[in-house]
Image (cartoon, rainbow, N blue to C red; front, side):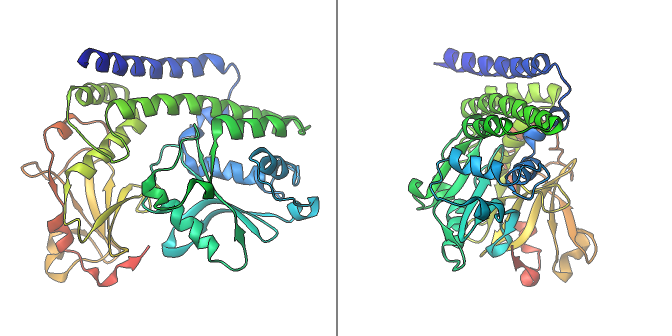
Length: 371
């Protein structure tokens, strides 16, 4: 059994290396998207998709890309060309509690929200909350919410929480977006736009390969949907490899699972929520919430630290900062005041407890807001 395990691990790592090599050899032309690593950046991917779907986008193709997309995904509403030309596409639409939906398409009095997940994990009640936000809106009608990933995986129960799969349109970059781009290319005459779309299609191909290998590694390392973390020889080997090769995305997932396991606090009072948008200074990875209100941010720059907007007067001497915000290093018991977690660090195998509760007790909750 152990032999099979390590064979799978070794095979997955070799495949990951082969993918990187194949991307280099396949792309004979200069692909600006590859240079900018757009396949790792959900926000940039959504901006490009949003502009292509927008009838007023810079592609100058009018409603054609949107019409092709709706037909491609089987959205069976019959809209006229005039109705499609007046459609709106909104990026990062803000809803309740300052949450943001990646893409929202409005046509006539119908709405089609799209949540894009490339590397980020699902958030608690995310799809459920998004769907019912629009269902209760009187000015728009929602049939389904789209869930777009590289390989078309199903959303987790953690995100759906009672929302049925009949209410969700599962899409993939590999099949749906690639096929859509192929058909859009058939109506494009401008060479610059053709080149851009062809390069984007190449990126989608490499994105899927990388995502498949990435998910295999996550599964082998048992960093599954429950964010489990188990210190073992496989983790030790991979972290050592990451230390040498700096695979930031895999390390980020290992680090996230580790911190969920190691951070100690009263879970009946507080919860950790993934902060994939890096709200605080671009470094936050978790939001700490109490009864739906934001209390603090768990951040990693070079080291692990906690940020809060208000500190109790008697505790301010222990925190750095001023009236804008306060911060303090987080570290395992017995370790010095800094804990380097920006890059792969084998110390996570030695320290499985980081006391967070005492820091939360020092925060002034009077200014906490729902967000």
